[in-house]
Length: 301
Image (cartoon, helix red, strand yellow):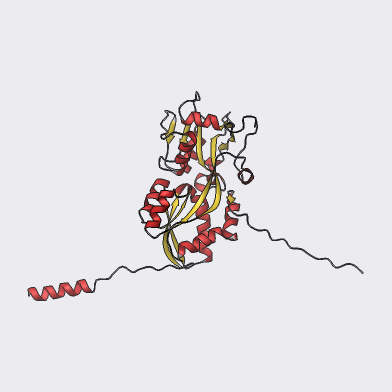
């Protein structure tokens, strides 16, 4: 009886169903892509159009904070990412040692927007004032709110302020850009810091909150003290580099193969993908071409 059970058990193990391996190609199959969660408005739009054009492609967007996304990428959990910063030299060397060299391309230019309540008398702010507020050196009674401590926005603000921690008593971390917009819409004594894409064509669940906030003008007085102009984020100010709080959006492809990651990367950098960036209000890395129809009129006899 024991022998029969042993044979039966062995046979059951032998015929146990193994998980199916998934294969992906340029425009078909499935693959996980890491996305900085602060970039979700533009990536959601790109994914929707990509999926409607290539119905056999099933990319799975894994939205994480910047710190979480980098950890997953560098630990070889997921090999394709869209982030708000490039890999550092030591991070690139790490991927090269694993024979997974990173292909990096900028696909859009974003802005860090400062927002206040519609009822606020504060409409403009200088970079020096922002730094002082972040370092707890300002006499302002305004509360500063941002998305979460591990986000790319917080990393940007730390670099801007020259501080390793943002722990002034009036600085608060929430959970998302949507929560920041909602908080500022309800609290006149606050300044919110969000990605510019969250303020253009917002989803219905927070569109009413966007209507209750106002984007501040910013002037970089640390470089040109004679410049009296305050600039708001826009495609024009990003293109002319007159808005001081800007950042690039990077595609980081470590797949080392011609699969769905490479296909999605190609789409993002294509004329179609760049038009989606243009429509979103961000600045495309490469301005899409314009079609001009020239009608030749025959001379009248």
